[in-house]
Structures are given as C-alpha cells and as structure tokens.
Image (cartoon, rainbow, N blue to C red):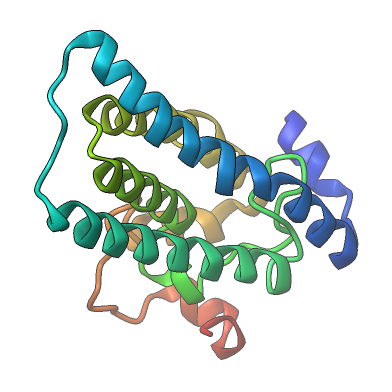
Length: 192
C-alpha cells in the first residue's frame, strides 16, 4: 500500500477541509502570484529581458486567463470538498473518484485552472521570467501527476479509474462531452 493510499484511508471532516484550504489560501492566492509578478519583473531586469508588453492587452488577456483559471480552480475545489469529501492536497485526497463537474472535461482541471491563473498573472505583469517560472512549475506538476498521482489513483480506484483515464483527456479539455462509461457508472448526481 502506498503512502497516498494510506493517507486516503483517513477521512477528515468538511470543517477540517475548509480550515486547511483557508490556511493555504495565502500561499496560492498571494505568495505565488507575487513571486510570478514581482519576482518575474526583478528577474527580467537582472537578466536584461524586455518587458512582455502589449499595452492594455496585457491586462485584458492576463485578466481573462486569470479569471478563467480561478473559476476552474474554485469549481474543482468545490467538487473535491463537497462531492469527493477531500481536498486537492495529497495528504487529504478525495474519498471518491470524481468524474462529474469539471472532471468530465479533463482529469486534472485543478492543474489546468492553476496554470491559466498564474500565466494570466505573468501576462498582466508583463514578465517573461514570470511566464517561464509558470511553465517550469507546470512541467514539474504535470510530471508529478503522471508519475505519482495517476499510479495512486489506479491503486485506489482500480478499473473505474483506468476506464475514466481512457475516456477523459489528461489536461486539455474536450469541450464537446461524450457520455462515457465512467460517468454513467457513478450516475447523474456526480454530473453537476
């Protein structure tokens, strides 16, 4: 049994999930965006990189990406806490395989939302280094998902996850949703 499966054995209350997410919010909503924007600008100056500037386009495109990413991330967290009885954290994983909501479009909507949101911050800040940092951290996250999390989900959910994995894209959403057996198996209550 893997460490992740061991963590999944203990179910925490919704209150613990919410408190944990509130405590981590400053890291993901303040510290990382600051690192991307301010740290990226500082790195650009030190490296002599030009500003990524499109005038008002930086704010429009950055704002749209950031808002879309935050919306996807919030929808995903809501599903993980309410339907999955868990969190995005590996130490408090969901107790159910989520196949509805944002998970019907791609298997990793939280990652998609996070990448879009932080890339939006980098574009709004006009920083090449910030965008590079987002791409680098995204690559590390995707590597973790492929090498660790998918193995853990297969261990915990078996054939249901294998079928879901075959039918739903990894991170780039399929916007036209076809009915799949993984979704049918869990019923309409997981479709919201």
